[in-house]
Amino acid sequence: METKRSQFRIRFEEHLGNGGYTNFCLPDQETYQTIINLLSGTVSEKHRSLYYLRKKFEILEVGGLQKVIKLSNNPDDGIQYLLPKSDMFDALWDAHLSTGHGGEKKMRFFIADMYDN
Image 1 (cartoon, rainbow, N blue to C red):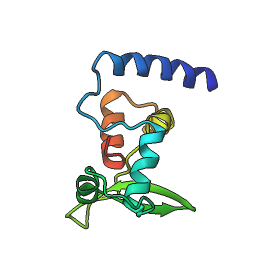
Image 2: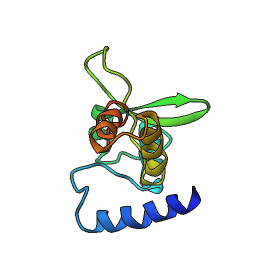
Image 3: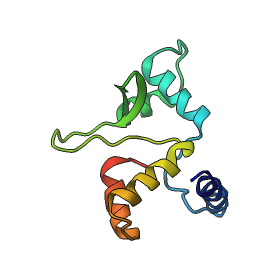
Image 4: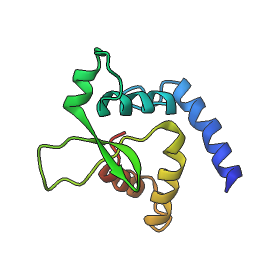
């Protein structure tokens, strides 16, 4: 499993370097933690992206961990999480197994319901 994870990270970083996911918000772990700090109010200074973040996201505490979720106007919509790059493999692996080793389209629809990026 660890070999698959390391192979994925190498190919994923190559893909990102080629402009593969330029339209997606795909923060690294440090940026993700900064987003959490800004939204939770632990940073006292005003940051220019704070207003954008508060319109789009909020914090949800899950099992003692703070997760960033996308705000929705429709209460029937499910919760969509914002994932850092470091958690992307686990999300894709879970989607792969949950869809019965489904193809790309099945995984894409499964992931689109759960994750914002």
